[in-house]
Length: 57
Image (cartoon, one colour):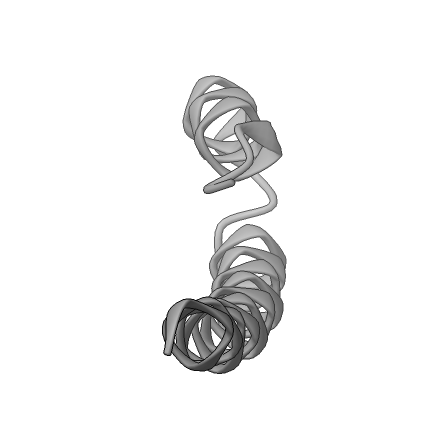
């Protein structure tokens, strides 16, 4: 019974990890798009780079 709950927790954890990985990928793409659009605004680019360099995990 105890083994079962541990395996359930692992499944939930791995699903969450995959979700976070996908979320990070989406955020990096969004950051790249924003940076591409406003390549003139250096300060904004730096702020965006800083925000998206912080890992979710």
